Length: 384
Image (cartoon, rainbow, N blue to C red; front, side, top):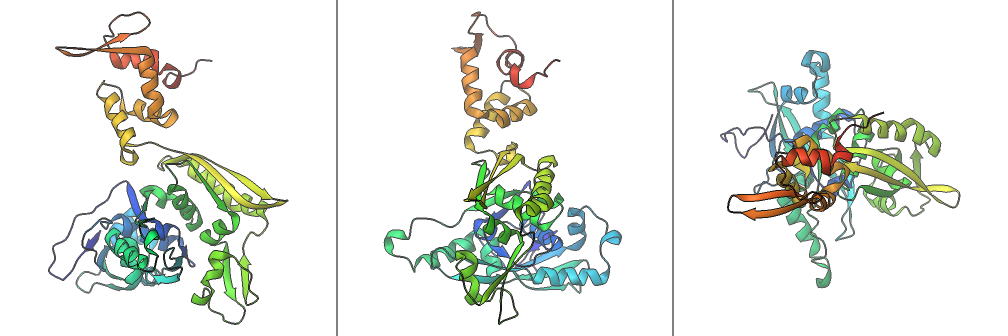
């Protein structure tokens, strides 16, 4: 469990577990340095259990270690010794990355966590203090304040162009994917679920996933602040060298991309399915990738129109699984159109009555008629 607290006497809060992790788009589009899978899962656990929309962001958190292991679906004895627990704590503290502030043009390096320690009163609890950018990137209000401060650098006519407060809803079962790069790819795709496609340069994708790192030839430490502009602009610089894993695209596709796509498509607990990728060439060189996919519908990730359609058909006694299946396959607009094509509605003093347009007969069982006559091509099994 994670407890947000302002002082030692604050009461504990219940878990905020939901189906979705809310992650600021600033963080989704950031480059995170050398992040392990366990670090990623720890960050997911933190984000899932704090209130992203809290009006009072705090830098103080408590992590219940056993709850984290339960989240990972492992047992303590099977997973971590005391030494490994300390390594995990250090790993959480060392989560760092960079992003380009679109308002100021600055390239910002950040740490999310300032420090982590074992609570002496409860050895199973970890006390976590967020760093400055940890608060900014994990809480909507803190990010909004940061964006407004950043906008003060803009000309007046640009100050209202973009709120910068957008966030990505990431299905919580992302934790079940097998590696950090797979999880990061799923995050990036999740940002475009409403569109069903994502186009990205191969360089940007490999950089975000950790397959490209940039180093200085004269300074051993990666990602010096003055070099960040290269990461995002990709300009040439004689003092910079890139280290690239799986440099040949065929290797990158075979050893990572195809495997990641298969893992996502075969994971029934995720809300993205039918994921495909198409390489795009500039001349003879592959320079970009075009991903297409479908959002797997559930009540929690519906937009307002989808939820209205869901409630409408549910009121007719139509099965929830059937409604979700149709929303996934044909969408709410086609559901309404097919309904209106086959059914007429009349209002009486007793409520609404429904009639088969082809026979003019009143429909006695609307849910049965919907299944047999309206959506039969999409719901009924195909006979050999």
